[in-house]
Length: 197
Image (cartoon, rainbow, N blue to C red; front, top):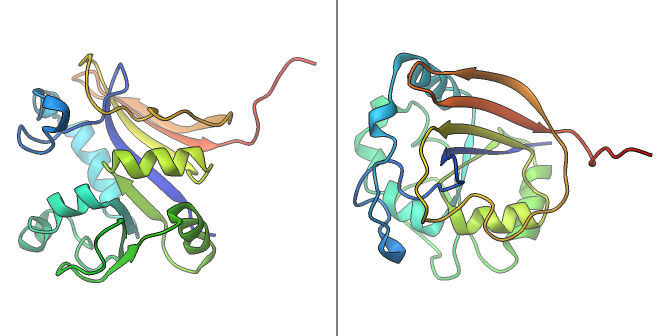
Protein backbone atom coordinates (compact mmCIF):
# COMPACT_ATOMS: atom_id res chain seq x y z
CA UNK A 1 0.00 0.00 0.00
CA UNK A 2 1.23 3.47 -0.85
CA UNK A 3 1.66 5.91 2.02
CA UNK A 4 0.56 9.53 2.09
CA UNK A 5 3.54 11.46 3.47
CA UNK A 6 2.99 15.09 4.46
CA UNK A 7 6.21 17.10 4.25
CA UNK A 8 5.88 20.58 5.72
CA UNK A 9 7.85 23.58 6.91
CA UNK A 10 5.93 24.58 10.02
CA UNK A 11 6.22 27.32 12.64
CA UNK A 12 5.94 26.61 16.37
CA UNK A 13 2.33 27.81 16.26
CA UNK A 14 1.47 25.52 13.36
CA UNK A 15 1.62 27.89 10.37
CA UNK A 16 2.59 26.36 7.00
CA UNK A 17 1.69 29.28 4.71
CA UNK A 18 4.25 30.68 2.25
CA UNK A 19 7.49 29.46 3.81
CA UNK A 20 9.49 29.88 0.60
CA UNK A 21 8.98 33.44 -0.57
CA UNK A 22 7.08 36.72 -0.14
CA UNK A 23 4.83 36.20 -3.17
CA UNK A 24 4.23 32.48 -2.63
CA UNK A 25 0.81 32.80 -0.94
CA UNK A 26 -0.38 36.20 0.24
CA UNK A 27 -4.01 35.11 0.69
CA UNK A 28 -5.66 36.49 3.80
CA UNK A 29 -3.14 39.35 3.77
CA UNK A 30 -0.31 37.05 4.87
CA UNK A 31 2.79 39.27 5.08
CA UNK A 32 5.49 36.85 6.30
CA UNK A 33 6.20 34.90 3.11
CA UNK A 34 9.71 33.48 3.04
CA UNK A 35 9.88 33.00 6.80
CA UNK A 36 12.20 29.95 6.57
CA UNK A 37 14.98 31.73 4.66
CA UNK A 38 17.22 32.66 7.59
CA UNK A 39 17.17 29.13 9.05
CA UNK A 40 18.86 27.27 6.19
CA UNK A 41 21.90 25.19 7.11
CA UNK A 42 23.75 22.07 5.98
CA UNK A 43 21.86 19.64 8.24
CA UNK A 44 18.46 20.87 7.06
CA UNK A 45 19.61 20.88 3.44
CA UNK A 46 20.87 17.30 3.67
CA UNK A 47 17.63 16.11 5.25
CA UNK A 48 15.56 17.85 2.55
CA UNK A 49 17.64 16.40 -0.28
CA UNK A 50 17.27 12.92 1.21
CA UNK A 51 13.47 13.25 1.13
CA UNK A 52 13.42 14.81 -2.32
CA UNK A 53 15.49 11.95 -3.76
CA UNK A 54 13.22 9.15 -2.53
CA UNK A 55 10.84 7.56 -5.06
CA UNK A 56 7.60 9.55 -4.98
CA UNK A 57 4.51 10.80 -6.74
CA UNK A 58 3.00 14.13 -5.74
CA UNK A 59 -0.40 14.77 -4.22
CA UNK A 60 -1.09 18.51 -4.40
CA UNK A 61 -3.81 21.06 -3.98
CA UNK A 62 -4.61 23.21 -6.99
CA UNK A 63 -3.03 26.37 -5.57
CA UNK A 64 0.27 24.60 -4.88
CA UNK A 65 0.10 23.08 -8.37
CA UNK A 66 -0.46 26.57 -9.84
CA UNK A 67 2.68 27.84 -8.04
CA UNK A 68 4.84 24.83 -8.94
CA UNK A 69 3.78 24.13 -12.55
CA UNK A 70 5.53 27.16 -14.09
CA UNK A 71 8.63 26.76 -11.87
CA UNK A 72 9.76 23.13 -11.68
CA UNK A 73 9.92 22.30 -15.40
CA UNK A 74 12.74 24.89 -15.60
CA UNK A 75 14.54 23.90 -12.36
CA UNK A 76 14.60 20.10 -12.46
CA UNK A 77 18.31 20.02 -11.57
CA UNK A 78 17.37 21.09 -8.04
CA UNK A 79 14.87 18.25 -7.59
CA UNK A 80 15.49 15.08 -9.57
CA UNK A 81 12.26 13.28 -10.35
CA UNK A 82 9.82 16.14 -9.77
CA UNK A 83 8.90 16.44 -13.44
CA UNK A 84 8.59 12.70 -14.11
CA UNK A 85 6.59 12.02 -10.93
CA UNK A 86 2.85 11.67 -11.44
CA UNK A 87 1.12 14.73 -10.03
CA UNK A 88 -2.31 14.02 -8.49
CA UNK A 89 -4.08 17.38 -8.24
CA UNK A 90 -7.16 18.02 -6.09
CA UNK A 91 -9.24 20.60 -7.93
CA UNK A 92 -12.90 21.46 -8.28
CA UNK A 93 -12.31 23.36 -11.52
CA UNK A 94 -9.19 22.13 -13.36
CA UNK A 95 -9.24 19.05 -15.55
CA UNK A 96 -5.93 19.42 -17.39
CA UNK A 97 -2.61 21.23 -17.24
CA UNK A 98 0.67 21.50 -19.11
CA UNK A 99 2.87 20.06 -16.34
CA UNK A 100 2.69 16.33 -17.04
CA UNK A 101 2.15 13.62 -16.07
CA UNK A 102 -0.84 14.96 -14.11
CA UNK A 103 -4.10 13.43 -12.94
CA UNK A 104 -6.83 15.80 -11.76
CA UNK A 105 -9.04 14.67 -8.90
CA UNK A 106 -12.46 16.26 -8.49
CA UNK A 107 -15.58 15.12 -6.70
CA UNK A 108 -14.90 13.06 -3.58
CA UNK A 109 -11.16 13.64 -3.25
CA UNK A 110 -10.85 11.60 -0.05
CA UNK A 111 -12.39 8.55 -1.72
CA UNK A 112 -10.13 8.96 -4.77
CA UNK A 113 -6.99 9.30 -2.65
CA UNK A 114 -7.97 6.20 -0.66
CA UNK A 115 -8.19 4.27 -3.95
CA UNK A 116 -4.86 5.64 -5.20
CA UNK A 117 -3.23 4.48 -1.95
CA UNK A 118 -4.33 0.93 -2.79
CA UNK A 119 -2.71 1.01 -6.24
CA UNK A 120 0.90 -0.02 -6.88
CA UNK A 121 3.39 2.83 -7.06
CA UNK A 122 5.61 5.05 -4.95
CA UNK A 123 4.48 6.92 -1.86
CA UNK A 124 2.46 10.11 -2.31
CA UNK A 125 4.28 13.23 -1.09
CA UNK A 126 2.19 16.23 -0.07
CA UNK A 127 3.91 19.63 0.11
CA UNK A 128 2.03 22.84 0.96
CA UNK A 129 -1.57 22.24 -0.15
CA UNK A 130 -3.18 23.48 3.07
CA UNK A 131 -6.80 23.01 1.92
CA UNK A 132 -6.16 19.48 0.64
CA UNK A 133 -4.36 18.65 3.89
CA UNK A 134 -7.48 19.36 5.91
CA UNK A 135 -9.41 16.83 3.81
CA UNK A 136 -6.66 14.22 4.14
CA UNK A 137 -6.38 14.70 7.90
CA UNK A 138 -10.14 14.64 8.49
CA UNK A 139 -10.46 11.38 6.54
CA UNK A 140 -7.52 9.69 8.28
CA UNK A 141 -5.50 9.37 5.06
CA UNK A 142 -2.12 10.64 6.32
CA UNK A 143 0.38 7.94 7.22
CA UNK A 144 3.45 10.06 7.94
CA UNK A 145 4.12 13.66 8.95
CA UNK A 146 7.69 14.61 8.00
CA UNK A 147 7.99 18.04 9.60
CA UNK A 148 10.59 20.77 9.78
CA UNK A 149 9.59 22.75 12.87
CA UNK A 150 11.08 26.25 12.93
CA UNK A 151 11.81 28.25 16.11
CA UNK A 152 9.43 31.03 15.16
CA UNK A 153 5.80 31.98 15.82
CA UNK A 154 3.84 33.83 13.16
CA UNK A 155 0.48 34.40 14.84
CA UNK A 156 -1.47 34.32 11.58
CA UNK A 157 -1.63 32.15 8.48
CA UNK A 158 -2.80 28.78 7.25
CA UNK A 159 -2.16 26.06 9.80
CA UNK A 160 -1.39 22.38 9.40
CA UNK A 161 -4.17 21.27 11.77
CA UNK A 162 -6.78 23.89 10.96
CA UNK A 163 -9.91 21.88 10.31
CA UNK A 164 -9.96 19.46 13.19
CA UNK A 165 -8.27 16.10 13.48
CA UNK A 166 -9.16 12.54 14.30
CA UNK A 167 -7.61 10.95 17.37
CA UNK A 168 -4.47 9.06 16.35
CA UNK A 169 -1.15 8.03 17.83
CA UNK A 170 2.19 8.58 16.11
CA UNK A 171 5.70 7.37 16.79
CA UNK A 172 8.94 9.19 16.06
CA UNK A 173 10.89 7.27 13.43
CA UNK A 174 13.81 9.69 13.26
CA UNK A 175 14.61 13.20 14.45
CA UNK A 176 17.41 15.70 14.58
CA UNK A 177 17.92 19.36 15.33
CA UNK A 178 19.76 21.59 12.88
CA UNK A 179 22.35 24.12 14.09
CA UNK A 180 19.82 26.91 13.46
CA UNK A 181 17.25 25.25 15.71
CA UNK A 182 14.99 23.55 13.17
CA UNK A 183 13.59 20.28 14.51
CA UNK A 184 13.41 17.74 11.70
CA UNK A 185 11.12 14.90 12.74
CA UNK A 186 9.42 11.97 11.07
CA UNK A 187 6.15 10.93 12.75
CA UNK A 188 4.60 7.68 11.53
CA UNK A 189 1.11 6.39 12.39
CA UNK A 190 1.09 4.08 15.38
CA UNK A 191 -2.55 3.04 15.71
CA UNK A 192 -5.07 4.36 18.16
CA UNK A 193 -4.46 6.56 21.16
CA UNK A 194 -3.19 4.61 24.15
CA UNK A 195 -5.12 5.28 27.35
CA UNK A 196 -4.78 4.18 30.95
CA UNK A 197 -7.22 1.39 31.75
